[in-house]
Image (cartoon, rainbow, N blue to C red; front, side, top):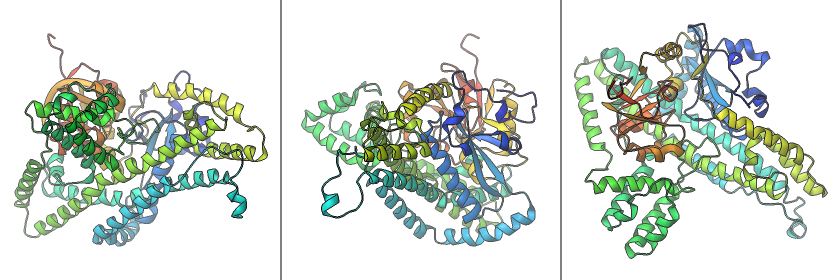
Length: 614
């Protein structure tokens, strides 16, 4: 997608609807789609694709995430902690993909007024971080457990007699409506909690980053990031469990059992074979112990209903274990290089600190300590929110799908995801009231026909790759979430704009993991393609998830479309010592599987290399 005006990206109304997707706008809540009445405002702004969280076009029900995420982000940035230079991120769905727009504060007087509120409120959290973070974990676990208790069971022929003998005065059918509303409310609450600490975490890191860039003009982004690396966080625990199980398999002389196991292999056959030996039973006990809670972990980010958790698809963790077993058998050390990272970290801190004056050194120490204090939350919150909470949420959504099928309202259990959350509310009422009266549901035929139409639309939308941006680039990108997580900086946007009209055989991005490597590209469109990755290849994806860590043991480099210095892709690559360039904007659209490239994780440049013989 290009535009004749090289000072901007295309506008929403210039986006081409894919063949077969006409009318896609009708699937989503009106406030999520561009409209004629909001066109002037939308065209005046800059929007970038949130393919980090939605790597593919979203089903109507799955768009609830776009509502909840940016409600929570806006509340905390704009109204609660009062970020001085940034409000929230506005959101739209365009051709099925989620786009967001950072809203900047540019008036110096208003920035100063907001800064006073921010210093008071953020200061309280920074001063009491550990205590408040502990309370945050309690709130999150309570919300997750609340969702877990919700039940959506088929409606009985009659209410149970206890409704009469206990004089309840209400039908069990109303539990469907009440529990649905509770499920939606808890999901939105989880996402308000999500942002309670996140922008403060990014703010702490950005402050340290800005100090370093001013004090050490020649310092690289990698060196700043490496001074905060090597911190033990919960996000690495699932992968550590796989490594431990691989080591145990070797100790119990079970390595041969895992030879040749891939994502396409039946998990049940391997587990049955292991159960037939004494050592295998010992290993299976450890495997079962690791599953709860560490396998409640999505293969990607858990923002769409059609993603598997490790627990739901045991071939995913077993493939990771098999890859680690093979490396152990080859004599390789599979442990995460934490000691080396910490040694490098401490060396860099010592070297750079020695360059400071007596007045600057204490400030450096304070900001470094702040960055290290907030860093664990930047990674750990995903375990609680995107993995543990989302796993329960989607489990309950699937139960709603089963309920609609049992009531004869829909034909397939995944039909429910072709309704947005407001439509599902009315459908559930239709089902409950029709059951109560004893008549067929009024909307069944109409919705079955509409769901059939929407299936074709969603398939057409998902066949297209999301353009990186729409609209007019800002003079400055100031939103910490956009900069640190997405890598959408002022410079990056200008590079995207130039790349949109052609490239010179190079892609530029943000240095994600240090080092340089050359290799063959493997473009992965979704997490389902991970099994295609071969040893020695360079993994190219819209974004990578922390749960892809086992794949990083196979890849020699990583390139992504989106992501910043504190994105999960960058953090994981640094912690695993893997060269990476993130936030390129066009990697999955430009690179092809089988091409050779050079990935320079120190400068953020990906170079397409000539084919052998050229």
